[in-house]
Length: 346
Image (cartoon, rainbow, N blue to C red; front, side, top):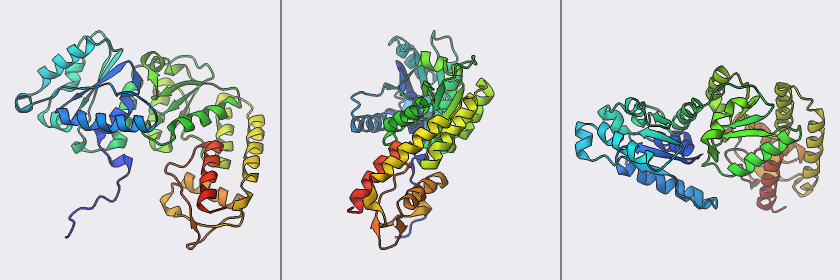
């Protein structure tokens, strides 16, 4: 059999645009996401999100509804169905409704923005998610974040930090948040909001009160620039990655917040040395991993560990896991070293 096309990139960035948007909008408390399209577009996404939630001990159903377009609406237009669905959804008392279009409604040309722009008494956001026109999971989530950012306004900075673009479907998402929060606390800095993770509309409205945005990764730098232009909040382009990367994170955050980070850096460097001392069994081990699969920051973090423990790459060595994304901060490296020790039989 000869394959005419072969999907070389099967990462989350190349999934459905609609799923990417849902991974953001369903994180807003007391909001409802309304999918404008056939019921199947909602059904498979509800199943996916619920399965991911259950795997993380989160016993909740994502609040998703569908306009459930049938053949008649697909032929003659679904705007009336959308109006009625929004009206019914407002009666459920949400703070916010996010309306997500689909490939079907993009094809038939429904004016989703026009319908959502009516006087509904609460914010009703329209998000275009016709993935067949271009884009994938990543662009869907990015567009959802930019749309939600329109709900807040500039304010005076209060010395706190916003965490921007956490990926709700990512493994260890809560561990990454707690580690970043711990590192900021070394300088006495608190988290203003998580945009968007377990976040409410009132919290989103006060996003402009922070003095610094910290992006989940450099892939959403466009969002960081958008927020900087709109809210006058500077940004760091990544959560902390690697030993030196974690120390640089503290230094840069301190610079942006006009804080002396030297004590925090000294404390964290001592913490890192103590952790490395607990894995002396790994010294001299020869391991196998593929650096070409790692992003530049991740590659730096992996090689730091190899050098610190006098380990070496060897095609015949023990194969050890390198998770994607790479672990965040010092605590993430601690979890990774525990795994490496098991795989290397140390």
